Each structure stands twice: as structure tokens, then as C-alpha cells.
Image (cartoon, rainbow, N blue to C red; front, side, top):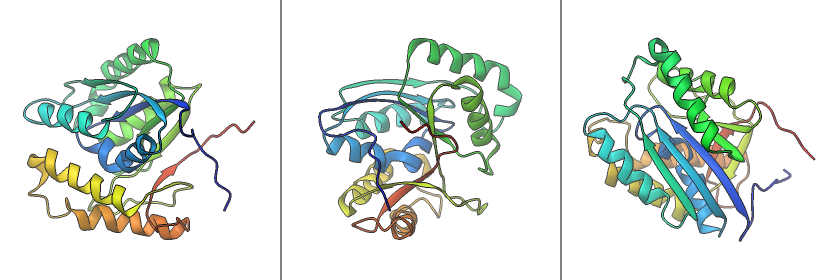
Amino acid sequence: MKALGLAGKGERLSLLCLGAHSDDIEIGAGGTILSLIAAGVRLSVRWCVLSGGGPRAAEAAASADAFLEGAAERQVDVATFEDSYFPAQNKAIKQWLIDVRNRFTPDVVLTHARADAHQDHREVNQLTWNVFRDHMIMEYEIPKWDGDLGQPNAYVPLTKAIVAKKAALLDQHFGTQRSKDWFDEQTFAGLARLRGMECRAPDLYAEAFHVRKLRLI
């Protein structure tokens, strides 16, 4: 399987990370972000959480700081759109994303998957494609009881140490989520192990993405 790198040590890469909820980016792409920083990539990151009201606002900010430790540049934005009602807030969310686009031009946009069963996640995906038409978009996956995991076509290999760090940071920063029976290291490591097997990653761990459009030069 031929590997194509996003960026190498010392190279600059700008990422726009979009998450409907405070733990989405970390679950879907946290290992990828940690791996890029560990590899010495000079990351410039705009980290956007769209529903960060109440106690989850502090969780979102603290977790973003932890996952982005070592990034060359970072900005964390926590909006207060109402959780579970994103389709009804479509116009306002679209304008918020347009404002982000007008102030930041990323190399890669990380967002939710199109086939995600959560209505907020799907809305963010649709608006991402509507607003960021000239960008490379990678759609991450979120495990959940709906059983909506599909067949991804892009993988980022992870080391066992990165998988453990990702799970530890999630547990540390999201106290509001610990009561959920699926929110634990076994879920995150198990999915990473499956994806690592699929792409024959060296350590047999990976995060997976859906990349629907890719221009090769």
C-alpha cells in the first residue's frame, strides 16, 4: 500500500478541525494530531467546537490545549450552538463557518463523516462541503451505538503509545462523558486496532478517514 505524507518533520501544515461537540475532534482525529506534532510537523491549527455551552465549554478548551501542546500555532474557538438541533440552526452555523473561512485558509479540513448517524454531525459535514469548496477535506469517524461505521479509504498509522495517550487525554478531560459505557480506552484502542489491521500499519493501529475528493499533482 503506497503511503502519501501530508507533511514531514519541519514542514508546515495548517489544519482546520471542526467538531459538533466538545470531544468529537479528539475521538475522530486526536491520534492523527498527536502523531503529526510528535513527528515534528509545524502545525498551525484552528480548532472549532460548535456546541460548547455549559460545563463542556471548559472541557473543550482544556482538551484542545492538551492535544495541541507542541503545535506551532493554535487558536481554539468554542461556539454555543444548541446541541442536538443543528439542522434548525443551519443558517447561523453556515455564517459562523464562513467567518472562519474568511480568516483562516487551511491545507486540510478535518470534519465529520457524511454518513454519520448523529444529526449534528451530518449537518456539520454538509456545511463543511458547502463552505470549504477549495480545500482538502478528511472526514473522521465517531464510534457510537448506532453502528454507523463505514468503509474508510484513508488511514493515518498510529503507534501504541499515541493510542494510549489519546485515550488517557480523553479520560482526563471529559468527566461529563465517563458515565457512558462506551467512552473508554477499549473502545478507542479497539477501533484503532481494527483500522490499523485494515491498512497494515506497522504497529497495527490507525485512525481512518473518508476522503471523497483528492487532487494529485
